[in-house]
Length: 209
Image (cartoon, rainbow, N blue to C red; front, top):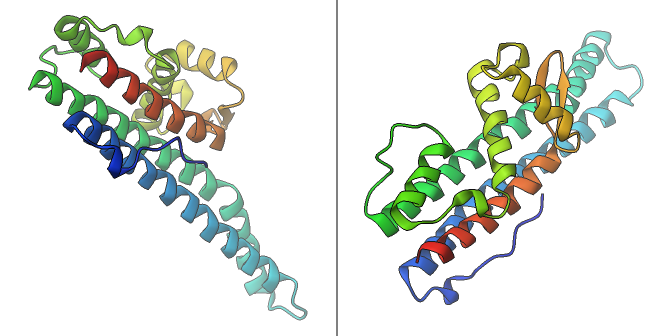
């Protein structure tokens, strides 16, 4: 997964610049974590394959290695992508929250949950329509995926808005697939989401500063 375009600390002359820099640093940590995890898993799979190719391997050991190989190539990879997606989403909400505190001196007072509370806050406090921001519809789609992953372990049949989640998957084959009735994010989603977070955070601070 690649890093979005970055500021450096030398570019920071105001608290707004530093806020942007801090947001990018945090986002880059998530990206580095995923890339390093992927590298380690790749090395682990290579070690397993190398051992499997040895002659006269104990049958029990061979069976265990085959099982581990399957886990690393499939379910482990899925969970790695899901976990990183959820932490990136949490980071995005933190960016929005810190932006609220920076420019408004408070968090949203409305009782709506998720991105909706931020949309209402910036519209009422700063006359900024988040829905006109870059990738807003995309991050709202990410919110739908996040909710079913977090509250129903990805089981689409148990989603509060089942039809909306099914439509999300149908519209975004590049970013999601399904397996055993569960939504499965693809690695491409992480790339797109990381770019959207960086782009949206910069756009928002430009609108309200």
